[in-house]
Image 1 (cartoon, rainbow, N blue to C red):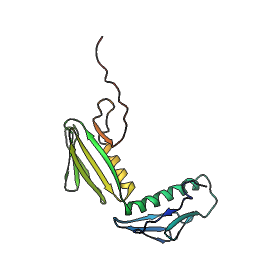
Image 2 (tube, rainbow, N blue to C red; image 1 turned 90 degrees about the vertical axis):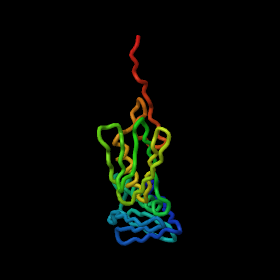
Image 3 (cartoon, one colour; image 1 turned 120 degrees about the vertical axis):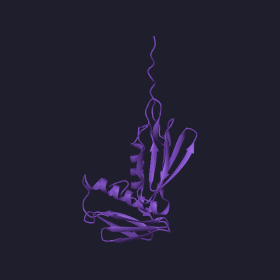
Image 4 (cartoon, rainbow, N blue to C red; image 1 turned 30 degrees about the horizontal axis):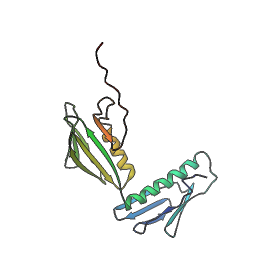
Amino acid sequence: MSKIGKKPINIPENVKVEINGSLVKVWGPLGNLEFEYPSHIFKIEKENNILKIIPLQELDKKTKPLWGTIRSILNNKILGVSQGFKKTLILQGLGYNAEIKGNKIVFRLGFSHLVEVEIPQGIEIELKQEKGRVIIIIKGIDKEKVGNFAAKIKSLKPADRYHLKGFMYEGEFIPTKQVKKLGK
């Protein structure tokens, strides 16, 4: 038995879930999402605001982890339409900056050119300027989109281990290295 897969998913009162064959549609106050699951391996049942995922065949090395994955994805869809998700990035460094122009974020990252990143649909960006750093808050209802967009931005200039200049997640610990000094 999968420890995660066998747990039932509680559906909040303000969320509506509809199951059509292998397609699950989720509506909530923040929006709607869809998810397609392998209906030949699993069956999803809804009763009294509780979703249960039931395997249709014997569990093996492939279906057991897939059971937990499907449960987690469905739970994230339900949480997304009811609460939403957010990731916070910190851009730190002298001369580094970010601003929103239309549906793009324009970064100054110490390169000879500006770096532009297009904001995908369903994602909201909020920028806060602080002393010596920029805080970028990425919000959305789809956890996968929010996480992938945050990772895409971070990959532009990850924080280095010597001076901690660049992008880092809020609360992320980066072990620093001491700068080599010339001397006797």
